[in-house]
Length: 172
Image 1 (cartoon, rainbow, N blue to C red):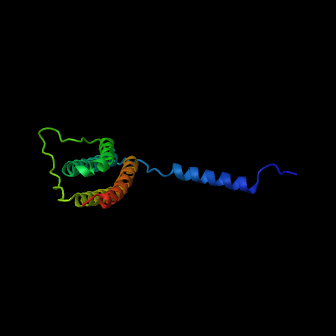
Image 2: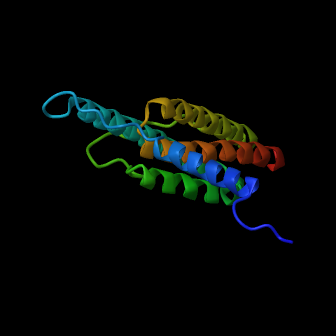
Image 3: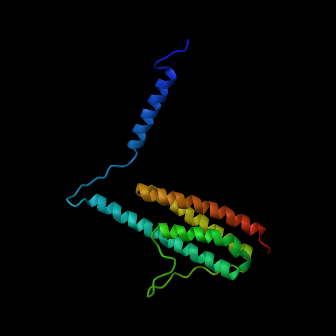
């Protein structure tokens, strides 16, 4: 005869689902407002804006570096095009612009290395550096920006790996 009613397995499953729901609902940090105008919220907003602006500057610098390497070493262009397009999308997600507005000087990217392999290796190192900086910024970012930075940092780490492999395959 088949048993009906609540079994131990279904009770444990329901308890686990309830506990998981409680944990997930309590994960967000409560908004704290200490002053009359919510100075903590304002400070968090300023910090988030500064983190987003710094991440956008890093993406703009990376994008110009991709373009510089592709222009200096045309043999690398087919491999760099999809990665550069992704960096352009990251820049847009961060609210940055691909080109510097007129009137403000664009930061000069470092000169491309003499050989295509060296240029790709340098670009991979730059991707790693930026991905590490974004991962470190996660600790002080608001949840929404932290998710975006984590995603972009993971993509940057993948780019670094792909650039390293592309450097190995590129003729000297």
